[in-house]
Length: 327
Length: 263
Image (cartoon, rainbow over all chains, first blue to last red; front, side):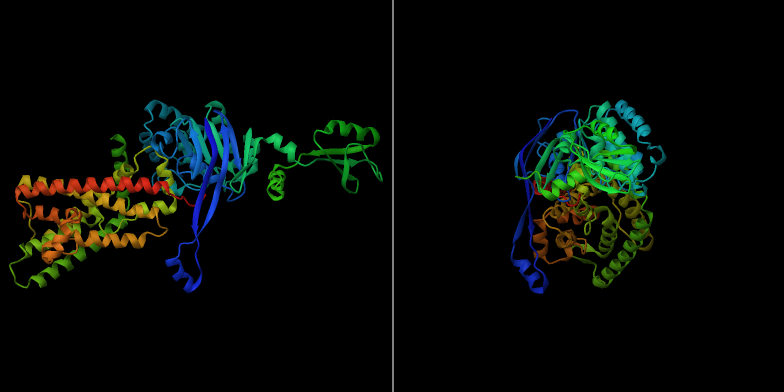
């Protein structure tokens, strides 16, 4: 459905000299830095996938999405979505995709939500019947009714996001691009948006590409992730595979009923202890948690225990910081 | 076509809600019109006519020019530029619609509100104070209406084109002001073109600007013969076509190098 090969986007950023003399120099010299926002990106996305696209600030996520939606023209490389070249076939292309940019709205700022949606019906030439059906459905699932007649400028961020997502889906797009759809939202609003995205992907079969800072979005939603940093793809695949490969170790916390000076156990190392509580570290794949628990309870009397998974945040942070995937 | 009217209609409703802005504009335009009429009275100093334009004609010219300020928006329109800088242009380019038509439809709504709420009210106000000239025949009135419609199309094509400079520079306001001086001066907005030296008039003939305002008023004042009126209407259409084509060309080049900020 989406095929990207060796895609690059470079920006020229003009240098500005400081001070009075610098201002004069700015007038006469045109020195610039070349920023390689996206650099040799290749990937494919199949119909019906829900893919998370993550990376730190300035990694090139938004630039990629803007190229995929036809807003930016690539510097080099190949890009084909549903057989179309987004920037060149703009009008034909955007009629078949939907996009939500978390930081801005597609809706008319000073119009009531419902009027913006009605305008979109005409702009996208949506047949009246399917418009009505979609709108009725989204009104319920996204709980739009309380603010349908409110001008967009008066909406809260969460309401605006729901309205924008509705607007992006009314014309039954085949692909939905979501750029930071949960940015700035509270936990409840985030969860609501996530459930809706999942529902759209499952029930309508819409392909979803999602960029986010919030890794819990990815963890809850995406079967597949792509991690980008400094314009390059660092990882592409299942989230579990990522965890297994770089996830570091799992942790088992044990509260012992008695005081054991050195409760060593085979297959795990002691990472720390605090009174009667000892934490063990063990590697996924080497030993199962149940096996480890069995071994401990056979040797010692325990009161309580808890298994902790490595946090995905932690994993990703390690990948960025330690550049684990670069070579 | 349906989309076009829906966009126009919504834009019209939206602009109708800007009551304070409309009233403020109306009052300002009204007083400046009186000032301009007073200047003409002083300038004419008992002369019956200057450059073929009577004092009554000059005052009517000033009244009409004031009435068309909002409608034609000939010396300030930065909406498209702003949409480039706020990044709203990205949402608009994501809509499956010709970008020029998208703006044209919305500008029509804005223009109609200004023509009806500002233009008509101003003319009615001036009619109470001054002895204005009115069209003599239905045919002439018809020609005036067509010329008014074409002048809007032409003015929009011009505003669209120059606003696109925002795609090249991070602050196009100065550039736009510079361009707007041309349309302001050569459209005859400042002074009827007939009152300028011949060489200014000659230069203006090679530009689209006289057809944005000066020609419309001359048709209104019955200063052109029948064939001249027809030629003027044709020239308006021709210039509009040229500017629209230039706008499409520049837009295509600009979007190719578009850098959308933020996000």
